[in-house]
Each structure stands twice: as C-alpha cells, then as structure tokens.
Length: 540
Ligand code: SGN
Ligand code: CA
Image (tube, rainbow, N blue to C red; front, side):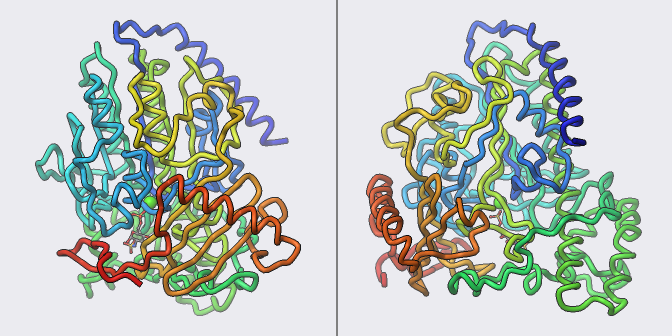
C-alpha cells in the first residue's frame, strides 16, 4: 500500500516535469539525438527500487524508468569491468575484441561505436572509469580515472585528462558529475554529442560521500534468503570461490575496523592509503561513524552466523550509502539537461558494467553467470520510447553498440556480433518474432582474485546451462521458473534429460554463431609487464 502511494505521488511529480519539458524542441538542424551513457561500477538491480529491490529508494533512477523503459533481462557477456566495457564499445564478445580479463590491454585501434559516431560527426567524450589500460581513441575529450590499477580513488582522485595527469579535490562521484555537466555545456550546440559518463561508485571498498557517511547506521536491512547457502545442490565452482562475506571479507579494507591511531601505527595498511586522501574534517566524521562499529566488533559477542549477519549489515550500510551518490548524480544530470532544454533531445542510458551479489549465496562480487550479475538497464528517450515501458527481452551488453549506431543513423558494421535493440525499445518493450532464444556468456579470469572458475553458458527464457571448465569439468543446469535462486543443479536429473539436450543444442549453435570456436581452450596465464597475455602456443 505504502509503495502504491509512493508510486502514485512519484508518477504525478514525474508527469509534471515531463509536461514541463515536452515543449523544448530540438532546434538544431542536425536532429540526431545526443547520447549519454551512464555506467556505474558494480551497481546491481537488487539495490535499485524500480527493479523491486527492497533495500533502498533510488528516486532518480526510478524517474528514468517511469519516463522511459526498464529492461529486466540484460546480461554482460563476461561479468567483469574491463571485459564488459570492451564488449560495450566494440559490440563484440571478449574472444573477438581480445579483452578477456582485467589484466588485458584494450587494442584501441579496433573500431568502436564511439569511433564510428565520431566519424559520422558526433562530438564524443568520456568521463570517469575507463579501465582498459590503453589510451581512449575516438574521443574528442577524455578525463579518466587512474591509480589503483585504474579503479581510481573515492577521495581526491587522479585523472588522465586528454593525456595530462591531474588530481581533483573532492568526492569521486561529484567530480565526475561536474565533469559531465561541464562537457555538456561546452559542446558545439549545432551538433549532437555522445558522452560516456562512467562512475567508480559503488565499487569495493565502498567509501560513501561525506554527506552519506553513517546514513544507514540505524537501518537493519533484510537478509537475502540464500545468505547461508551451503552449496549442497551445486558443484565445486560454488564451493571453491573466494568471495564470501564469511571468509573473504577483510576486517580493514572491507569492514573498516581500524581506528585512526591504529592506522597511524601502520601506515602501510591499505585502508590508511585511502583514508589519508580524505580532508581532515571528513576523517573526523569517518572516525565518528566507524567508532561504534569497531567497538561492537571488539565486544567479542559476535560469532558464527551472528557474525556473518553482522558483516552483511555493515556491507549493506557502506555499499548502499556509496550508491546514493550515483542516484543523486543521475538526478543532477536530468535537472541540468532540463534547464538547458536538452533533456528530450537526449537518449539517457543507465547501466552498470555488471550486477553484483549483495549477500546472495553468502557472496559479494560478481563473475558467476548467476542471475544477480545481470545488468540494470534503463533508457529514457521520449521521442520514441513510451514512458513506463518494461521488457523481458533477453539482451546483452554487445547489443548497446549497434543500438546507439541505429539511433544515430550510422550503418552498423557487419562484424558487430549483435543487432540493435531499437525495435524493442521503440515498441513498448515488445519482442520481435525473430528475437534471440538465449544470451551467451564466457568468463575467463581464473586463476585470479576471488577464485571464480572459468565458465561459459547460455540463458533462455526459462533455463540456464553453465559449463565450468579449466581446472574442473562440471555442468550446471537450472530451471529458473522452478528455482529462481539457482540452488538446485538439475543437470543429472533424469526428468530434465530433454531440456538438457535442447540446451546443449542451443549452446552449440550460439558458440558457432559467435565464433567461440574453442571454448574449452585452456590457456596459460602469462604476464607481459603487469598485463596478462593469453598464451595459446601451449594449450591443454
Ligand atoms: C578489485 C577488487 C575485487 C574486484 C576487482 C574487479 N579488489 O581488484 O574485489 O573483483 O577489483 O572489479 S580490491 O581489494 O581492490 O577492492 S571490476 O569491477 O573492476 O571488474
Ligand atoms: Ca565492475
């Protein structure tokens, strides 16, 4: 009931603002839309209220959904930052674009939707996280995060701005938003622009903006039903990962259980390295906010499952407070576009490089092909997208490049591996008759941090088939209608024999279609400097 009232109120406010800006015509001669591609890092649908998440309210993202379309089944084809970004730019899967894991280096000489838009007369810019190591190409302007292996810092972050190193004072989400707004204000108003607007938040180790420090300290968040998963119904991949709240979460980096004095005694501590970037008054607030947490932890009362529950609460407090800044950023951006009359001339996309586990299966992080790693995808463009649409169409991040080119009227290159989503977006989310039967996934970063084994697979409307290869050789099959939390692997269940056969057929077809010709290839992990290269000379 409460939710209904909230939605009704919200809709009326959103409706008013829509009516208010509907009169703003595109006065440019060149009528092609601007494109603003907002991508956060590790922001997941469970933490966004328009996706039905029960953790927090995200009014600005909800506004995007109410005034645009909410896509419910969009998947990264390789749920990790660098790989997802490379897939998005090129419209090609990792084995084709060459960026298979976070230790790769992007070959930025290959065509991207950005370089194609640029050639077609678009102004192009990127602000925030890039994470592809090589310098961006095809952009007129870039200001990208550097430091901490290109993850950037939450406070006083370093940037590479068109090749020059600079340090900006303040909180990362706000700085990136300022840069985005400045870029929009600085473009030639006679030509369309495409801006990639990429946040660091809410990536690990989840450091909130000063104004959000302690925001949720009195909130108790609902626990996911699978927080205490014992992985019984599944194989070694789930059992042998290293991304659990119970075992992997660290006291210092993740839980922030160090006082200032303790940090000063060991200034090599990783938490201290990011703490010392904060101005003194923020450090004071930080100390105040984390002191009760440290005290509670050291009281010695927390053990076993109580300790896991407690850690989960601290995780949610930090993650969700950090994510508040991105919801506010989206609000600021929309208001600004409205004020300069560009809101309706602009396709605004909101997504995240991948989803994230918020305690489901006892985990944080991503990488697995399970449902929690799906991407949020909200798109607002009132000139052709009906407000309040929703869609269950199976989408992938490699669909983005052809979609943007389609809206910009630029020819989609033959070798992009997928097609535009435009016919779905402009048609109230309805599926065309010949839409795909499944999405394809292939994850490579193993052995590596979090120990998630290599895997590939497909997801259809109802089923999911996964093969964990390299190190182990195990298959998993899920019936998502019967088992949406993916607790029961039915691969060896005789009653699913037909489904299993059907899924293997589809998988083979997908691998052929996407030219993943040797998916079980076992590659040696080699390093050139600190960059990983795939050694294919000595496989298996
Ligand atoms: C860092 C994090 C990992 C995370 C990767 C990749 N460790 O290495 O937890 O999985 O980034 O994330 S941390 O100790 O540095 O916080 S990604 O989103 O960039 O792919
Ligand atoms: Ca990420």
